[in-house]
Image (cartoon, rainbow, N blue to C red; front, side, top):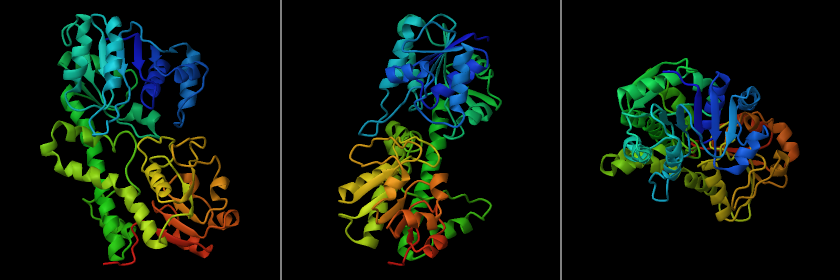
Length: 427
């Protein structure tokens, strides 16, 4: 099947790279977003998010004339829905944006069109939510138009490479739909394109992120055990991972981002009676920020009035994504405990976090601090030279929640260092 024009709804971390990649591969692309600031910014060549190489790609797509950005869809051969799917307070999926995007397509849907949902969604969303909305057009999914679910499977910081090189799972409402989507993705995907049904594809995405979430929860429990038993969890994990069939992930202040910290709840939502392990892992990881603050309190006593430089607010290293970030949760809890916090995020220095005082430079964070708390292993933060830091701050107490700093080097520079998961033996 041949495609000339594609409409991409949602210009976030997935939609914008996808739209730009399609445009630079010769297709006419209409990028749609309901946020006027995003639309106006992109129309002027300004990006609203950071991803290595993305600015160059977007600007090339815009200069080529193949990518136009606007706030409403228009007729196209294919429509890709790449909007956010957050969760509600009760942990159920919030599908408002998926529904709104589907409704926006209805006036433009024509016989023979392809519609792809890429937004991470609970199983059966494609069949039970998207299809009925699109069929308000008078057309029937699988008969008059093609309908597919194909999850994004890319890593922030490597999106542009993985968008092209990773295997792509394509789940159709029927076989013909899957084959149509395969033809569109073949425009730029070099990895394998594997066809299945849409509900299986929805499940695959959730399984991948749930696997990681459960593994990280295990690592975080190991860190808590090590803290109590008086051992070094980082050494123990490294030794355990020498076993050829063991791969324990890294502990830390928790799990964030819009995938691993969210997706497992979609499985709990559809079958709470069958997902006790998944729920338990989510509860462990969601409670890890509390453990970090308790770890500091056990060492320092009351945190009220203590001046803490919080280093890193993103949900993972070397990205600017603050969504569901456990580092922010730690900072909030410190504020609630009465600490005087100055938080610095090098990839988004102008970030404004409700209730968390932020600063725009590392120097501002270090100034007048008495405690340094490393919450994100950004390369820039990990490569700080302790002797230089010593000249910039009066702080001599260091808490490393991600094992990002060499303890011996910082101690030689005159700092007292505590690392998460390295215990004193409080059994």
